[in-house]
Image (cartoon, rainbow, N blue to C red; front, side, top):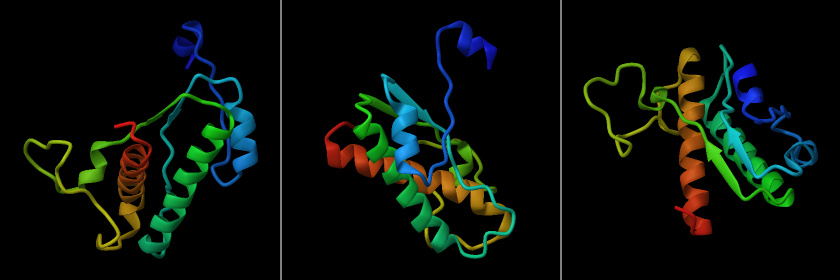
Length: 129
């Protein structure tokens, strides 16, 4: 990502399960852009994935708040609408969720959907929509 670095963007990585390390990584940042998602070929249970994703999104939010970050941008994907979505889609189209049929190849799209849904929930809760 040399193009971003050339524009003054500092890239940092952190393990989503370690809130303290996330907060340290976010220290001094004006904004955080998150594109994280679960990606496991054999995720046995999407319900557990949803719980982990919700927890990890909350950890990112808590860590960014602890570090004084003013803005968090959640990067989503068209994958949140499922493999067989067709036609024109709008942001309010139904997304994958906890009741999604559990298949090894839909962990990533469901994870992205859950993360987006959690971001919207937190934004509404914080009055930042």
